[in-house]
Amino acid sequence: MTNLVSRCSFFIHAKRFFAISFALLLLVAAPLAANAQSEPPEFQVNETTGNDQDNPAIAHDSQGRFVVVWESDNQDGDDAGVFARLYNAQAQPRTGEFQVNSHTGNNQDTPSVCMADGDRFVVVWESANQDGSANGIYGQRFNSDGATMSSEFRINSETDDEQRRPDVACDAVGNFVVVWDSNNQDGSREGVYGQRYDRDGNAQGGEFRINSYTSRNQREPSISMDRGGYFAVVWASSRQDGDDYGIFGQLFDNQANPISDEFQVNTTINGDQEAPSVAMDATGAFVVAWQSAPIGNPDVYARRFDAAGNALGGDFVVAASFSGYVDTADVSTDQAGNFLVTYESSVAEGNTNNAYGRLYGSDGGALTSPFIINIHESGDQGNTASVLREDGGFVIAWHSDNQDGDGYGTYGRLFNCTDDNDCDDGLYCNGIEMCDQFLCAEGEPVSCPDDGEWCNGDELCVEEEGGQCASAGDPCGPAEICDEEGDECIEDVDDDDVDDDADDDDADDDDADDDADDDFWPDDDTDDDDFLAG
Image (cartoon, rainbow, N blue to C red; front, side, top):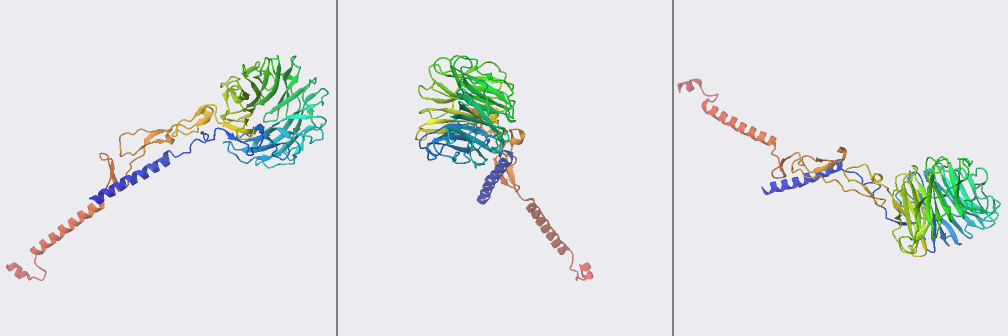
């Protein structure tokens, strides 16, 4: 009896384990949400930490992969050089840091980058004394692995005096346009110039002047391009709006032909409007953000435009300085026209700057209040650059003072959602994913209540039934029967054994009948007369 009980106990636990395991495998086995929060909250981009690594720029492709570039002091052997690092869509490094510039004499700094579909990208920068006369603009093309696709090349044709502050934009296939400001080329101090290239790095025509108004300075250009190659350029222009610097722009087709008159961006004209940034969506509509200082410390302003350059309302305040300081605005947009403005500010944290961001919908309505981007808050964090991705997430890079142990370092952070829909993995049984502070958080798995019945198995969440709970089924094996009252599986009595016992009983009965017959009937060799005679 003891052996029977032990065997039953073993079968109960073993069968129950295999039944539940099998049911779990079939019904609820599924990966966790691919975009659930798993990345570190912020990450260090630069691997070399000696001296300063700052002034970052960032670009991404249609799959969310991205590249960060920055300038690094004394890393290439002679003053500043330009370095880069590639990341996948989950902000995991695909490469170590690598040097962008080939020429290392003097400074190579102020980098900008754009990335086309297929993860190929172009980096441009200004280089001191390389073109024979002060600063010039240079570039390099890279494939998806970070390998160079050509030798580095000079972009500016005019080499007299200085060419500075480059920016670059790509279309979907990799054609690109570079813009910069050039001193004394347009006849009156600084002017804005551009050069168009095909995807193989071949110059398409000569360099061209972008600003029509040439008096005094036109500088600090920013460019953005749609997937078909149409682009917008904005810049700061001195005294053109009637009071110090103002923001102006120009639209071009994919052959670099102007398709609009030069237009004024800012409606607020008191004081300086400087350091503009522009971002264009899939329709050609665009948004411009800039630093505005009508009174005292600067604020961050922005304004929206349609694809023809018509203003969609007046300019508006993104971030006001009040008693603090707001600086260096950057704007990025997704293909639908939602946009993100980032900047640095000391408003909330005294004299220490933090990096801030604010999200807007495609209609210009604010989706968020200003939020702090960086987690590490010691020292200054600022000089932001951002990309807003099609999956609802965004990546921001910035410089951080003394966080890496020596001067400025370059840091990044992936925010992978703007609302709960961005986090939904399409599964039910692992719970509802939520967007919490722009990071996807895993849901609470569905817990199915026990229905009180033991013999129908455990209650499990069924993915194929939209997350409904169902019983796993009889937990007992084929040689067992389920005892509901005892909550156990017991060994079944084999029907063949019963039949064999019955057959044995029948055989015994047959033997008894044969014996009786033998007693009653005479042997075959008994004489019939003797039998009849008695």
